[in-house]
Amino acid sequence: MRLFTRRTGQHPVDERIVLDDVHVRLGERDVLRGVTLDLPERRIAVVGANGSGKSTLARLLNGLVLPTGGSVRVHGHDTADDGAAVRRAVGFVFTDPDAQIIMPTVAEDVAYSLRRHGLSRAEVDDRVAAALDQVGLAEHRDHPAHLLSGGQKQLLALTSVLVTGPAVLVADEPTTLLDLRNTRDVGRRLWDLDQQVVVVTHDLDVAAGAQRVLVVDEGRVVADDAPGPALAAYRRRMA
Image (cartoon, rainbow, N blue to C red; front, side):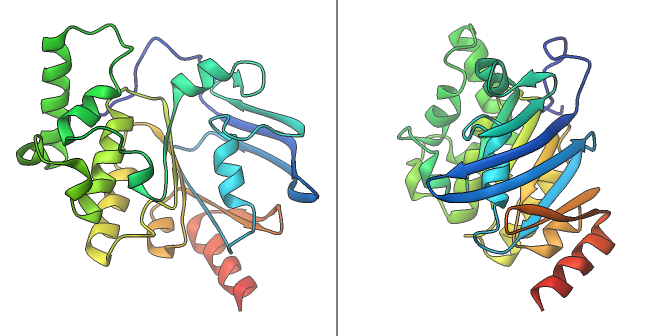
């Protein structure tokens, strides 16, 4: 059984992410400048140097950051006007899983994500058990969550987001703190999901698994293409 499927019947027909002339100004700095994108693809990677604006771009997609100019629509919802619907539709995974893990044990952390879904205790227990089994954490269900390995923590953070069935998953550098084996595992799991997935990453091997790659530099999207040509453009720019 594939547990981590997006919810059906709860989202608009328009399953695209659309940014229209988006600007973000934080303090005295223009972090993003005139970004226009239409993103219907299911697997999208975003790459760029530190400070390029790529993490701000990711945070626009679930309303953590609102545009100071232009608009962002995610599956039909405007992030400025319909933030609650956007947060229901978009799951977000941070770089550091310790920033997301809030409950004492592994099972409790996953169950916490389901607290507002109107499920019975038995239904929650069943979904938590299935979710942990799917990612290989079943035997750790009663373990202290913050004593897991780095890779296990990232899987737990991912599981706690996906168990709610979001339509979109945004992951901001989810493999930065992981070793090579766990980076490959998490990258593979992300691209195998049923959701529309947007991954911000420094790992070009992970980015190569996307359908479309955006290269961000100095607040602008400077390349937008299939992985091969987009990553080649990024390498040239960084050289």
